[in-house]
Length: 79
Image (tube, rainbow, N blue to C red; front, side):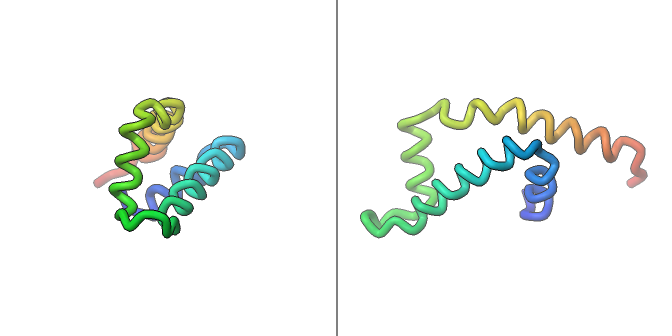
């Protein structure tokens, strides 16, 4: 997914959901800037998800809402 598409989806979320996304982005940023381990960001995220497999399950509904909104917005577009 491109940055622009992701940004549009995030901006379409309610304020409370945007704050949660900002919280998780801040967390991921802190992982990236952590000097304690010399791991790549992907390795750190994968390690986190292995330890917390359901960490982002609460966003599944939000993800689906975003996709449904996009489908609704572009249903009459001609390609």
